[in-house]
Image (cartoon, rainbow, N blue to C red; front, side):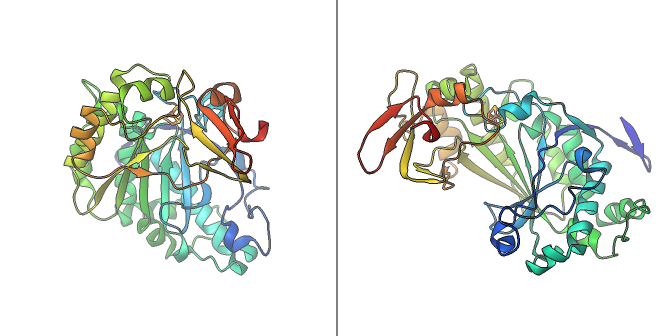
Length: 342
Ligand code: SF4
């Protein structure tokens, strides 16, 4: 723990999952895979801010990958990330990374040509592994984002950054929406150390919690998350607790988060299904009682519309256990087979 202007700064663990400014729609005429103006900088490997086009909000945004998880999903997109060394940062240092990234993008001639400016960036996505395992750090980070004066003070410390940070950038950071993607387990577990009342302190920014369900009943969860069944109940309880503290600044969404879309990225003639231990297609309308009472009673479950992807970070041996791939043309079905292996 370090100190910043009298405030305790609790360190958080992050992963460095760097790739180009992934704003491909805008960058496409110039760079097929997006542009990364930070790649040659000495701080590159110690930065925790990645760029993306936010699927949820359909605008360019930033992503921070927390490190460490309390589940062991078979199709974990970040399986390899979980094994990598983490980067330790205080909330203040994360804010510095964000300001530095904003500043670099703002000054980059190619990003400018792609008609992206700081005001077209809309979100910061905090994702997994599991962000809530680092609750004190996460809360301190949100408190800073919520307070424009604190962000401005931090930006004044960045005297060595060239070109200097313009005065309006702290305000740009302050107005970004924050999306926290969580499995909800740590929030809902018995004797959870997380006090959701902390969130009542957030008065200026908009924070969205997306609870990512790994199935809709204990059996599906146990198989897909490769974790004990009671953790499914914690997911449901975690969602309900979050739902009950919603206000004008805190928003809550339920999502089936297992990469389950039938359509496959880069393989238009193939489809996939998620299968059980005995090879049967999983039915995601087989809701358990607790799922109905603690989730569906309040809202409907979002089904992921993003195409199925074989992410680079998966453990292929584990991932193929839950996947069946089929040809949309011939109807041929191969169980325990990833699309690239079809
Ligand atoms: S909750 Fe997310 S990060 Fe954790 S194991 Fe599952 S997919 Fe991976």
